[in-house]
Length: 214
Image 1 (cartoon, one colour):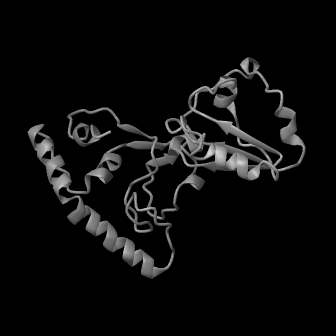
Image 2 (tube, one colour):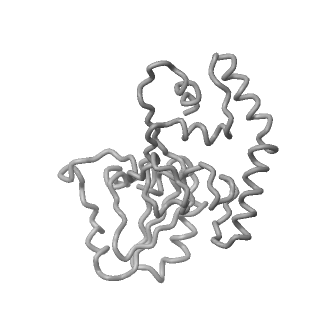
Image 3 (cartoon, one colour):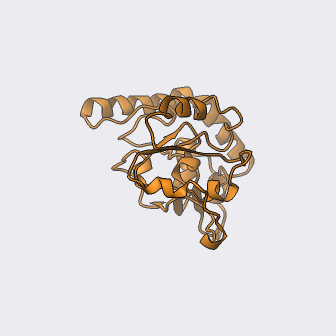
C-alpha cells in the first residue's frame, strides 16, 4: 500500500485504486488518531482534543517514522510526503474502495469523495453447492440466536470467547452458532464461509475487521 507514495510521481501513470481491508485510518477532524479506540464525540471540546491528538501523533509520536519514510522516497527519487505518510497512502489514490458499509466506520464529515464504501470483499458462491445443516430450521422459530466468532487467526483456543459464550447462554438462548476461519472438527466448512447475518441474531466477536464485515 505504501507504493502509492511512489506511484503518484510516475510520468503518465495509470489511475491508482486502493482497496481498504482495514478500518479507515485517515485523519479526520471528527475522530481521534487511529488506534486509540476513542469513540468520537460531536461537541467542540472533543473536536479540539482530536485536533491536538492528531497533531501530536503526526509531528511528535511518528516524527522519526515520517522522516524515515521521506528518506526512502528521496532514495527512490520520489517526492517526500508533506502530509502524514499514513494519510498520503490513501490520499494518493484516485479511488479508494473501503471493504465495508458506512455503519462499520466512524462518521467523518470531511471524508474525501474518492473513498467509497463498497461492502465486504467476499467471493460469491452458488447456493446450490451449500449443504444446509440439520439445525438450520431452528433459526426461524422467533427466538433469539447468538452468532459468535473469534475470527481468522485467533480460533485455535475457543476458551477465549466461544466457550464462555456457550456456557453463559446455554440456558437462555435458542441457539449459539460459531464460525471460524479454519474448519472445525465435524463442522461444515461451506456453511462457515456462507453464513449471513440472521434475523433474531446477536453477533459477538473479538476478531479482525474484515471478518466482522462479512
